[in-house]
Amino acid sequence: MLKWLSRSNFDFPPLDKALHEPNGLLAAGGDLDPQRLIQAYRHGCFPWYQDGQPILWWSPDPRTVLFPEELHVSRSLAKFIRQQQYQVTIDQAFEQVIHGCAGPRDYADGTWITTPMQDAYCQLHHMGVAHSAEAWQGNELVGGLYGLAIGRLFFGESMFSRADNASKVAFVTLVQRLKAAGFVMIDCQMPTQHLHSFGARAISRREFASYLRRHLDETPSQDWTSQADPLSLS
Image (cartoon, rainbow, N blue to C red):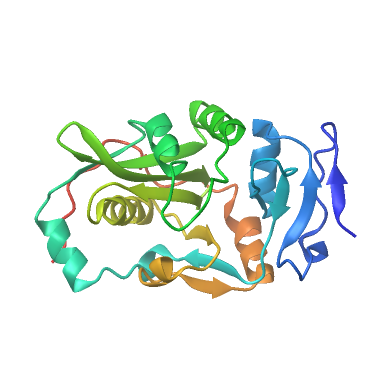
């Protein structure tokens, strides 16, 4: 039976209580209080719902993740990156990035990144938990992505692109900086061909939970959010 959360109840059910159909639905209700969101990610679930629905909390099995050392950059993308058409920064335009991610898509009606969702993650950004990577062409923001960094784990949320390969360049830059700082895993949540092309793969929910237990309270080896340098890929 699906557990309903109240505004005062921050306790998520065990991950193995998630439904098989739809895959990973763990709980519903509650709110987007920043502390609840942090607890959700630490527990192994995330919010994903459409406007007009109650807040739905998910922990799919299997879980799609990317291990930074397994990042795959295609020859064509590596060549594009070497051309340095975009400058990539970290945490310089979080609100612009999440607004970009919430914009209309050719393949979808509406957005799950509702205004309350944007407001909540902007609060997490001000708390130093949510981060963005931005791709710039001159003074124009042409792509980016955002997610949460807790311990030595990064929980990716969404990306957008307004120019060729812009979000890909931002993503590769972010992964390389996380790798240099000792991050061990990037949560990609759900499988897509786009993520698989970068080397993302599926692991079981049980294995995902083991990474949470081992690495959520560890400290990165360096400040990875300082100004990003141009990538140099051979």
